[in-house]
Length: 388
Ligand code: FAD
Image 1 (cartoon, rainbow, N blue to C red):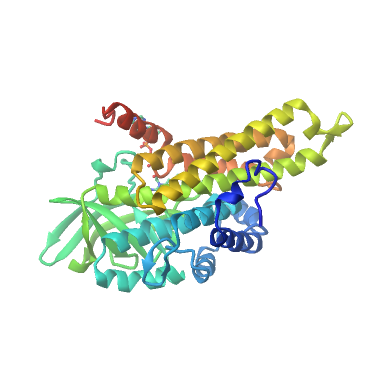
Image 2: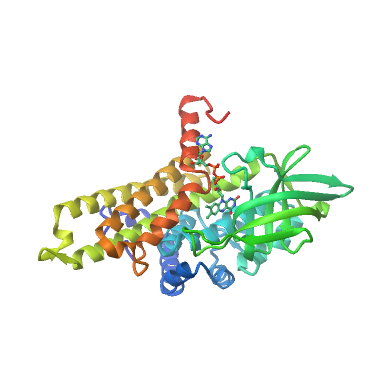
């Protein structure tokens, strides 16, 4: 299966057969299980997260780039392609998979004890258990080092107090990976969400990522056994490494949203007639389409380059920042430009373009805002940190 008409550079030829097959399987799943329903989920601000998680689990999409414990052990490029296809359906659906696999599962897989891995990873890979990742707080977003959530020891137990905000999957999750400040620094904990003292509340009235469940987690003297601690996670670099994993998926995912906008717009522009001819025939429309197709292909080459680096074991966080900054920014610009070509229909939920654009506003902010990625790149270029 080849990419649509926007593949001017024969980018398909850069993928091997297995990568193309994985892409085809995920694309079919999105066509069958997401595309026909997502406009309605979006309008209602609801998504059948458990049902989708089980279906994604059956296909091996949850934690697909991890090895062992029921995970598929796919390449980074295959994982990226899956994210692209999922986000061509909706960024919220891709977020469900990213948070489960790259944030919650990765944290346990990378930093957990053998018992924690055995307990949580197989059901999470199967989509039978849903995970979330609590780093952001009401007063601490871009600056997680200032987090107010505290973990204190009480005998062998740990006691957590504080609150997390804007947590994807929280209202439907079984387990949260919670980051809290202990005496010795930032530590991570696996927190079953039915633990006494934990409450979740869904955040409603989002104007973006409406096909994704987002919530708040309150931790009121939550008592956890000693084995809830992720033993290998010491310091803020642990949650930041999880974010690097998830951002890699976003580098690809944003291209999926942009591709769906472009495909929709190409179909629209060639059939919509004004002044007696298809609007695709106007030079101003063609200039927009050409610029968008060029940006999309540049973004794809960037994602693929980062994927190949990851697969050869050499991907650095600031390289992921380059990808996230560029691809989300360009995807959003593409969504906005596509919307203009659809005219009034561009603001209608009958077409996916404005939904993708609205979703990308969240994608621009979460997993490090554009400004934070600029600062990461700036620090690498100059050797000077602008953070502190
Ligand atoms: P702030 O940090 O308050 O930033 C506000 C503005 O100030 C931004 O433009 C920012 O770039 C700018 N700014 C801040 N510091 C600087 C600086 N030093 N220099 C220049 N500009 C600066 N978090 C989780 O932990 N888990 C999740 O699952 C999760 N899911 C999310 C889902 C959605 C739909 C959304 C919208 C957010 C989610 N988040 C999640 C939170 C997200 O990661 C944060 O919103 C993000 O880190 C930004 O934090 P903030 O919103 O507090 O903004």
